[in-house]
Image 1: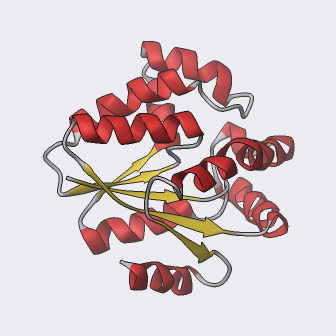
Image 2: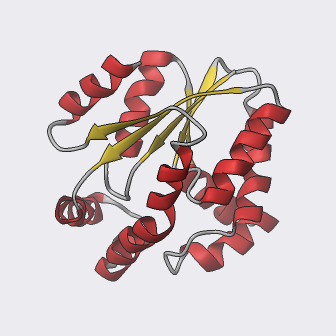
Length: 187
């Protein structure tokens, strides 16, 4: 099984591009945010612990994410491939994912990094808040905190990934279709 990683700041369009690539590649889209919400809503032990962090806009501890992603990889062993959206987000998570993939005889194909300026991210966050039913999308302070956490923790992890995996940067400005075509061309 192959693993494709889509990364980028919050509100960069990762989820949208993952859904499109899901159909194009016949890989299963795994949204970290959706899975964490599922765990919380179903009151799992992982979900209860995650709730404390997510509601504040903080990252979930690496050890808990490794446990969750070990479960996710096991659940998807029979798929052609998976597209990871929102993981890994720290240097430790990069190492954890590489280790898990090796243990489970899976290959990380490429990391697609969507680049979008902060000013555009805040515009997109506001638009998403207007259409989303997610409580955490309604608070503009959470939007800013998520972007700041990304810059502090995840941006360095993307740089770290470049020393371990194939990483391709993409301009995230433009229409959904334009961004999709840029990504498809690299695959």
